[in-house]
Amino acid sequence: MTSTSARPSQNVMRPEKDRFLARENPFEEMMSRFDDAAQRLGLEPNLYRILRTPEKQIIVACPVMRDNGEVEVYTGYRVIYNTSRGPAKGGIRFDMNVTLDEVKALAAWMTWKCAVVNLPFGGAKGGVICDPASMSNTEIERLTRRYTTGIIETLGPDSDVPAPDVNTNERVMAWVMDTYSMHKRHTVTAVVTGKPVAMGGSLGRREATGRGCMFVTREALKKLGRSAQGTRVAVQGFGNVGSIAAELMAKQGMTIVAVSDKSGGIYNPKGLDLAEVLAHVKANKVLQGYKGAEAITNEELLTLDCDVLVPAALENVITEENAPHIKARIICEGANGPTTAEADKILNDKGIFVIPDILANAGGVTVSYFEWVQDRGGYFWDEETVNQRLERIMVNSFDEVTAMAEKHKVDNRIGAYMLSIDRVAAVHRLRGMYA
Ligand code: GLU
Image 1 (cartoon, rainbow, N blue to C red):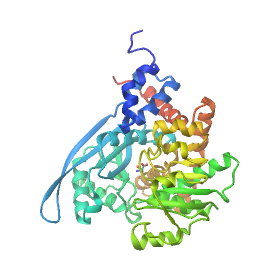
Image 2 (image 1 turned 180 degrees about the horizontal axis):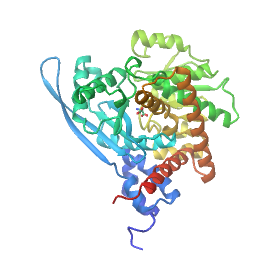
Image 3 (image 1 turned 90 degrees about the vertical axis):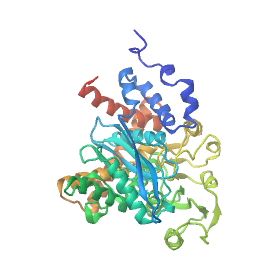
């Protein structure tokens, strides 16, 4: 056998250089897990090479007229990772920390995420390097329209369907839909998901990611023989995912002891009054200054004495430095990529039950799928139907991931990767190699 036709060995798949890079490069960080799962699945080297590489990477310059009359040129990316199972699906983020490697990693994650919950989608992600907090609404609108126009060839209900992500929302999706539709000369609602309900959005989409986190946490508690009553939860990130997850978990009887946002965190071991916290955020935009609890840092929140930790903010917050001090029994990853590969090993040794991102936060893309189906069918479901169907998919997927992990004696993350890579690979085999 030549080296190219041999089964991938640990050496071939994880060169020392990549393991080093993994600490700094989000794509390599994701790939280190992919390699582990691919190795255990005995993935053929040819498929391994295909699945390790994004299908398409687009970089666009987005000139935008600032309100003061000056033109600023922003850089935007859209990475289509894999479309073997269906149209590419994944959000668009507006953030100063966006890099091509990050977008590549996030696009790959979307591929595995859609496959974990068995949606007929591939994976993609988009990002624009910008600081939306320092831009006016009209500047953000112009940027959105220019970026959409820049990547318009890839977009379409059958090819690539964006959604909200970090710092983008329903309003941004409405502009994407309008820009695309103006170019096509007719209204195409199914080109984006996470739109306002009035223009083809789905009921329950806004809450879907947080709701999905609640469902899988509830299942994890059941599996560990614990009751929701008295379970203490700390949530990092109080945006769309974290705040909804906290509210819905509280409704299940759990006690939310801490939440945080960019401005810092708040902690009350007896439980926070979420209605009051939300009212404070509505009035002040940030958690800072909330009087009914002790102020803590984001870092302190991660190692609090609690039962469930929900990192629902950004990547790489659980690291080899803080992982040894985490006291939670369950981690529900609301964010994409909150745990580094090094930290994973430590959490495993400590016996922490991790619900990995590609399962834990898949509720959002699941209801995006429902939205796309409703748009294409032109027939809309009531909220109860959306939530029931979401629950069924999240609970089934939780069971499938944990069964895979148990069968192969791996942690839940590798179990989730194995399940999803196997599904993507199966379709590639059926479709054949056009190579
Ligand atoms: N941005 C979300 C995610 O990371 C949603 C993607 C979508 O709905 O397409 O899963």
